[in-house]
Length: 316
Image 1 (cartoon, one colour):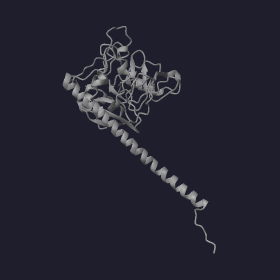
Image 2 (image 1 turned 90 degrees about the vertical axis):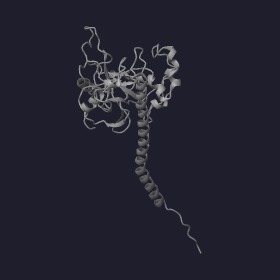
Image 3 (image 1 turned 180 degrees about the vertical axis):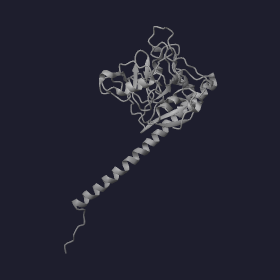
Image 4 (image 1 turned 60 degrees about the vertical axis):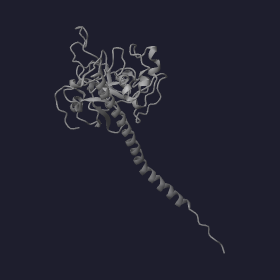
């Protein structure tokens, strides 16, 4: 008697492969979403550590650290001992500028808590260590403090209204809007360090001279980011030692995930930005951390960036 051997036919095999493909297609978004949720949770924890360090710094020195010192040393550098990173701070010569040879070792020291796991950029220039987090300067466009020389093109511009700027050293009592309604830190991924290509993390140059935050935001959004003529700063997010608007400081000029721009002489609108879908993580001055939607009302976002505007922040 002839015995028939049982086996898959070609059609059955193709059907099984198709079913497996459909199942993978259905499961992959769920797996990716779970991974992003884990990354966002870690990012939130990092910012929580920034908030705790900020309060411990204030308890010690009775003020918050400056957004940058006269030698352009960052807020991040000041907070290191309160993040169990005293060894990294011991490498810093605060009496020298951020790019002085005395600070070579510090500039290249990788600090894990400074980096969001959703930030894809890991290739840094040799000797530069980066950060995905920035300190809030406020909702104005002036970079630094108001000039006293009446011939200066920025003469008469209001002082920064956030918490961190040049030699700021603000106290808790200066936050008249309350610590729970004032932003301290948010995100901005590291750049591609290549002015030969456009990247969403770059700081662009509209070649305009806005006088208000509204003008700055509109002019920044109007430019063509694919045109290299608007390329300005691709060295974004590194080194963390440098207190700079494209490295460790951001503004509440445009909403979360909007484009970052600079407007020489001395006007800036770098934004909070992230690769988390739909918004950014933000640490408030009370130490709490919130996820803020990129569709937040722009005035509410600007109110969060100000320490003493007197307006209550609406629900967000």
